[in-house]
Length: 153
Length: 151
Image 1: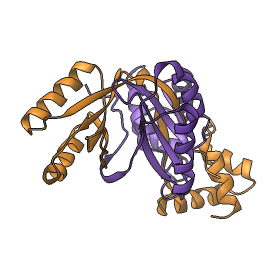
Image 2: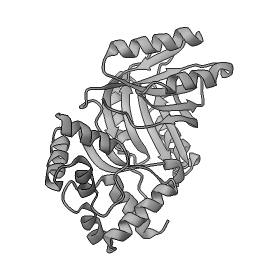
Image 3: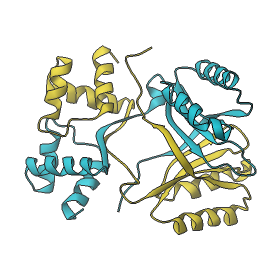
């Protein structure tokens, strides 16, 4: 990444200009052509650094009132199957296998979002029952202490 | 929020086309003008439904590694500990959660040493014995998309 890429990334970490042609506005700010900005964006995207230019929602204000982290103690030989099954649910946004520790036996994590808590609790208890997962916990988010985007450089 | 807003939010979440006239593409799909798209987007941001409209980066591809950390923090020092954690620029998310581990944050750093040093400082400064990093071993899903038109 060169100087122009760094400046472009810095701009993109802020809000996109609210103009009819946002890439043209960015180009004006950076003192380059719109074509250059678009070529740089496409290159950043192709290299995997830029996932997209898009909206991040405040999900609590979007009708998704229930936001939880659910943790399961999944048997190692069932991890793959259970992880893939969870990933299929539209209620699940992130799903990872994580290392446990002595004080915390859970290994399968899912971030879940729903319009109400009952929907999520029902899904989780049925999932656990159906697949014989005896230990799980639903960790409600009680307070958002920080939510920001990572600032690079 | 009307139907056009919901459709617009879904398009904005998928991402703007990385080509000339990105809102022209949306305008054609929604049957409204580019100007109206910009107006509606601005309103959704002011209403707090859209938190941010901008670049979404892959921190790994950008050279950072991120770690989920869960901690048990006693109530009387919770606020101070949260302020300390939040002050680290690599902490992007921090939530108070129900349960024994009541503080969960993600910490992105350029090297493991920086992360380990910060967690050690957190333990020492607030006398915390239960601060656990939970490294990711496998990803099954990473797709943050809130469908505005469904259900």
